[in-house]
Length: 639
Image (cartoon, rainbow, N blue to C red; front, side, top):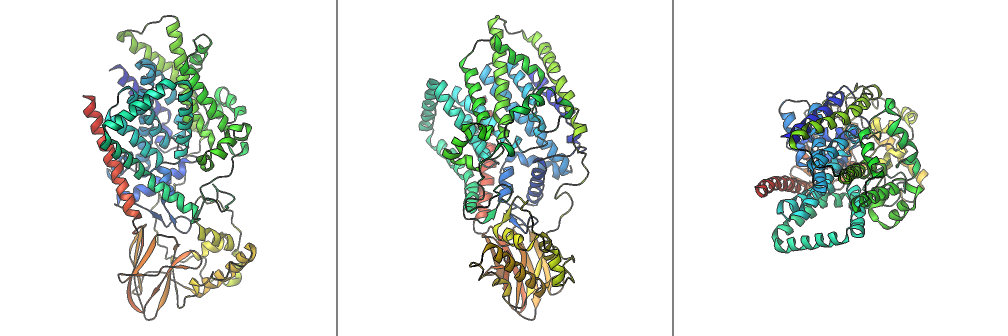
């Protein structure tokens, strides 16, 4: 009962240290804010039985796949948020509870991995505490790293466990972790870690690697059907990411911040990274680690001071292959993380395809370097204990020693974390989607009553600051400016007596970029004034159903009309009028249009009915089934 007690005590101390974030008094910062928003939108829809493939509230309407891939929407652990929300807990508190428990799950996986490596519960607990109270904990509230890191840690646990005992549960555990990793932003961090790990394993542990490969092949030969099912699950989990990648290759969407050049390459690709844009900065590490506590903020590098005492054990501890392996692993990660300051990054960028799709290599500090350093410190402590022939303590003494270690270790981190309450902004404004949000906009906005001269004054060239847009919407926004776009989108639906909105861009290809933008601006302005904006529901126009993937409208006009739905035109949408599939037009440069005959009509817009929604639903079920089967196997084979 010693270790469960200490683990619970450690977690309670961690909760105490970050209580202001968990209560919502302090604001999330950095990448943690948009991830909160992605989760809020996803959980809101999932709670209603909708798998949201589309988001009409972002940048004129965008496919939601990019944001689903960022959070890894198939993860069964997210069901905890749904359950808590359904139980009456606010989403904000449910989300914080999930983050806390997912972080604990990561740390438990790290403890079990350390136990496999060191064959000692006490040393594994030391690893657990050192990593739990490192700056990795602060990234829970400033980054997305805990989402990929938890399955990465558990992957390596199952990897070591499978080497010791070739059980089905460990093999399925490996598969399930891979499934989580490849559906979470970004799997390329893991791919890089595995590249380094495999290279060093062959170089330093060649014999063990050969044995591992042989044991794996023997397991696959013995359990062919089971192995094939695991492979099928893994390959299925790759499909959404592959489809999203191919859409980027076709230029259907743009990522203006990620791909600043907006060249003809895949929109997901990034230009070679530089020291200025990020990376691991050696010049600031020493100051952050030892002297900059009072200005400590979320995401700053920090390790408990006790760790450095263990690291100093290396002065007398014997060198071994484990220390060499971990040291080289951290060195490789660091060399890549300093970008052009070393040849490693440039070499990988030119020869390893996925490096072209990666940014923020400073994250290797937490994904590789900090955990590996913890292992190095504990391995050197183990070497000193062995050198002086210090035998393991009896269980009656172990609890007291570990409690003392926990107290000494966490007292300084809690002091350092206390500065977060002073250096982190208080939470004032609600995050996106926290207030009730309506997809339909009927109320009047500043476009009403404006003349063409007024519109001309609104023109302003926008900076491409949005993360994600359809290609057509981005091109239109560059031409007309943010102000004009806001004015136009003051209404969700426009009606036209002719097909002019469909023919706006038919003869623009021969123009230069500047001429094209000017012509688009003039034509679009005219279309804004010619269209009849739907201001409210009436007997002639009524919205029957409005969901992210489906919009159903009832109309009744005495003449033919072109209905323009101001939501992004994108492949995968289709429209039915009175149950019959009709042509869906690209109208007003970037939006959806459909011809309506005179009389009463029922118009239904659908997204994902071409099999995309079914694919996601099947993979969703596959993840939950695999997870349940994994739990059953673990308990069954444990007995």
